[in-house]
Amino acid sequence: MAEKPSTSRVCVHCQKPTETLYKTYSSFIRMTECELCKRPVDSYVECDNVLVVIDLALQYPSAYRHILYNKGISHFPRLLTILLFCGAYEKWIENRTDQLQIFDLEWRFYLCLIESGLEMLGFVLLALCLEYCMNGSLKRTDFVAKSTVAGFYGRVCVVLSIIFRLYSESSYRILMHLFLFLSHYQICRALHPTLTAVVPALFVLTTTLTTHFLAGTIRELLVPL
Image (cartoon, rainbow, N blue to C red; front, side, top):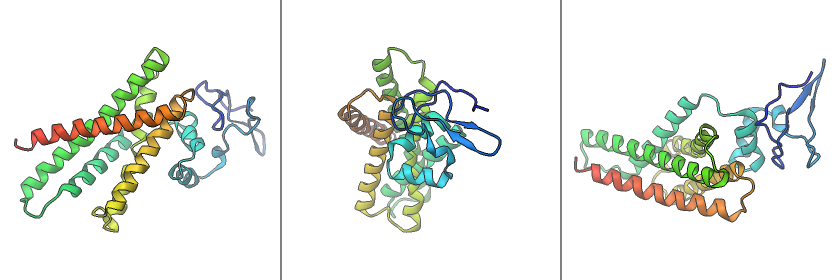
């Protein structure tokens, strides 16, 4: 019995659209072979989620394609909330000073939460602009928006920075910025496979600098209030 077809599913190696990822028989499943590259379209369906997360951390393009196209992003509101607060906490703890009173610290956290949300919103809007320039329509608005937000998943590493007190280390900050850059780069390439390797890199770099500057400026304008 064949798996339920889905027009959005692709081969994780060459990104050719496919109807099924595998076929189910009485006692086993058989992976579908890609018509173009002759490889299993998505071997991740046999893997545990931990292995997928490891490949995501290693920045394997096939892992990103598996998540975006073949598995999908589930529980998006929960993911969005977690990423917003992780980003806000990281910014808050970087700018925290001992001279501030408890009420000032609380207010600054709310400002960092606004900054975190504005960065994500700006990234999504620019990603939709790229989508429109590439395809001439916004039929994939929901898909592109969710995929772009998922690119911020590296923010959850703030938990490790708290446990091991890494937030004050410049090497940790550089590594996290690099990780987020690579994550957005891989997602941009997955969304637009026809682009050359340079274009997604320039887009992510420009978008990151622009959203960070604008969100930071708005936060500073709100500080005196």
